Image (cartoon, rainbow, N blue to C red):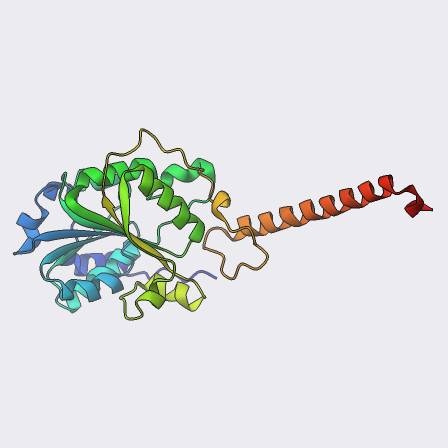
Length: 278
C-alpha cells in the first residue's frame, strides 16, 4: 500500500516558505548576487527529495549556494522545513523540474549540477525524457560555467551505461566513475531514497562529467535500456527500479528461445540419425 499524503503539506509550504523560491526565473543569471552572500559557486540539485542530502552538504560548504529542485510538493515542504529548523542560510528550494532550467538559470551560471536517481524511462520512445539524454546535456552545457561539472547517481546499471554514451556524444569527459559508490567512499553523504535503495541491495553507480570538446551532431546510441541489461538475467541480484517487468519479460523470452533452440537441435539430430527414431 502507498503511504498516505500528509494533509498539512500546503500549510508546511507556507510555514517554511522562507526557504522556498516561488519565482526562480526572476533570479536567472543573478542567483549569487541575489542570495549568495559571499558564495562563489552555485550548485543545483535535481531531484533533491526531502532535503536530507542538501541539509548535510550545505553547512559544510559556505562558499556555495545550493538550489534544490523537486517536482513533488511534499518533498519541497520537508526539505524547506529542514533548512529553516536547522538554520541553513545557503540553500533554497524550488517546486519544478529539469524542463524549466533554462528559464530559471542564466548561461554559464551553474558550477555543479547534481542529478540524483532520475527516472530511467526504460522504453526507447521515452528516451528523450531521461535527464541524461543527449539533447538535455546540450542544454546543461549552456548553463554550466566553463569549469562546471555534472554529478550523476543512480541505482540503474542500464540507465548508467546508456548515460555514458550520452555524455560521450555530448562532448563530456568522465572525470570520476564508480560502480559501487558507498564501497568506494563509505562515509559519503546520501539521500533518503539512496538509503532505501542501499538497504534493498542496490549498488549505487556514480560519475562526475566535465565539458571537454564540441558535442556530436546527434545522438546515435541505442535508446532502449533493454539493450544495456547484462546477458545473464537469470542471476541478476538487483533489478533497478522501473525495469522489473522488463527483466521478467526478457527472462521469459530468453527461456522460450532456449527451449525452441533445444527442440530444433533435437529435431536436427533425429533427421540426421533416422535410426534414433526406431
